[in-house]
Length: 210
View: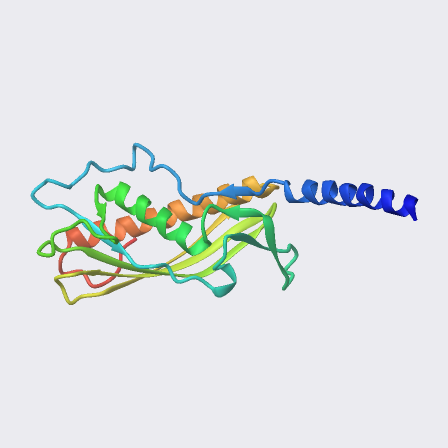
């Protein structure tokens, strides 16, 4: 009985060490946001005679993607996906995507994102509502995405509907996959910024230009 009594704490300590080793394995966090290149950035319009304000609604994404974990498709056309617990976005995917798009659009327009406030109610704002229809990431292959968005100025009746399909080849590994997703997001933000610029330049336009 004495031997069993003494062995139990040792067994328990070994089990706790093993568990702590598993629990301490670090997660890897990624962001979709990327700095706007100096060549693409516009000077701020805030404080000028015609300031530009944007308001980006929460991005609608497929339910399987609405989580912080990275979701990747298996190669060779498999219907299965993998939810990667150890590889996560810095926030839930739809929030990470909205923040990256908003900063990318604002930086390219010299605009201010007033989604959470910060503009006088008398000043017009460009309202952008984005839906992500497709986002397929395959390690060592590609990241493919399809975006649609509506564009409307708060003091106008016209609404423009835009659509864009994008694809980026990626190398092997989660870092390369995240970088490919970042490039896709940046390209989408650039297209959305161009659609606002085109609408600003042509107040009578009803078709989307990207």
